[in-house]
Image 1 (cartoon, rainbow, N blue to C red):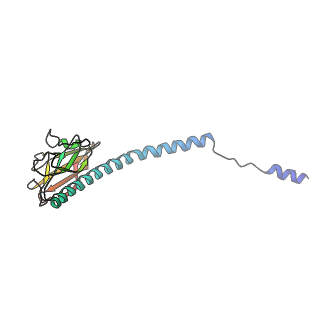
Image 2: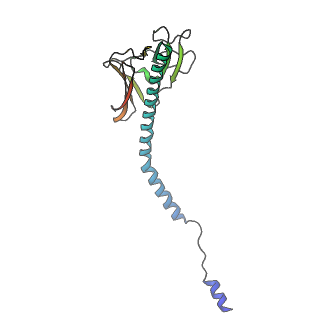
Length: 193
């Protein structure tokens, strides 16, 4: 009987859970890891936003070119601060910089570069460029407030025109979208101020 008692008393209880010190140490380690990861995550988000917006612009340029050929009419891209209302319209202002407000793509039947609700057909819209800037340098750094594709697929810009997309960072983080007179558009990395 005595042996049973010794065996019973010799068993130890296994601790369950964590002590307060272990919890505090775990939280501290987690906070350090999150602090180290946050700047990298911000850069990933900024890079993704630039690439996405550049991709959207390239897609809309391609759509405008294809629609001009398909419909046999001019198709115009122009900045629009009221892209989300009906009727929408092109926005004039400081040449080249008003593209930040968003833009519209439409079949421009009378080729005047302005959206006429009676004759023109809206094809696509783009929202404002959140946290980023989109500037058009047009032909030989002359800003433009409209880009037209002819029924042949060529543009109204002889040579080539450019759009520069940047955010608040400096360095080689932006995108330069070049539109050639043939209507072909390409994107490349560019330096931002």
